[in-house]
Image (cartoon, rainbow, N blue to C red; front, side, top):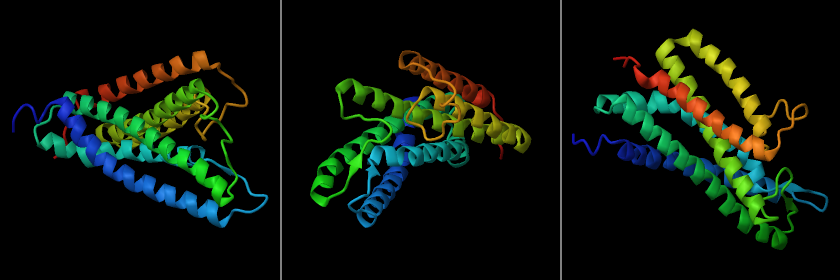
Length: 235
C-alpha cells in the first residue's frame, strides 16, 4: 500500500465520506420526524421550534455516538492497513471538523425552505432558543456555536471510546463521569446545547465563551492524542 493512501489527508477523506453516509441517513430520518410532528400536531394554537433548534440536541448525541464508534469501528481496521497512530489521529481530527461543519450547514439549509413552507402550510415555526435569521452576525454566532457543539460532543465520545479500548472498563466508566462534567461546562459556553446544567447559575459573555469553547476543543484533542499516541493494538 502506497504512502499516499496512508496519509492523514487521505485518511480524513475516507473517514469523512463514510461517516457522511451515516449522517445523511440520520438527518433524513430527523427531517421526516420533524415534518410528521409539525404536520400532525399543527393547529390554531400550536407553535413549533425550527428544525435547527429541534435537531441540535439529537445531532449532538449522534456525534457523541459517532465519536465512540470511531474507535470500535475504524481504529482497528485502519491499524491493520498500516496506518500510523498519528495519521489516524490527524485524519480523524480533520474529518470530525468537516463533519461538524457539514451537519450544521445541512440543518441550516433545510431550515430555510421550511420557513417559507410553514406560511403556506399554516405551521407556526419560530426560533425559540436562538435566532439565526435576525442578522448576519447572529447567523455567524449560531453557525460557529453549532459547529463547536457538534465537534465537542464528537471529541467527548472519541475520548470515551479510546479510554475503554486502552485502559479498560474501570477507567472507561470514569471517562463517562468526566464527560458529564465536560458537557456541563460546554453547556455554559454554548447556548445551543440542550444539556446545560449550570446556565441558570453561571452566565458567560459571548466574547469570553467562544474562545473558551475553542480552548475546550484543544484540550479534548490533547487528551485524545495522549490516549492514542502509544496505544497497544489488540489482536
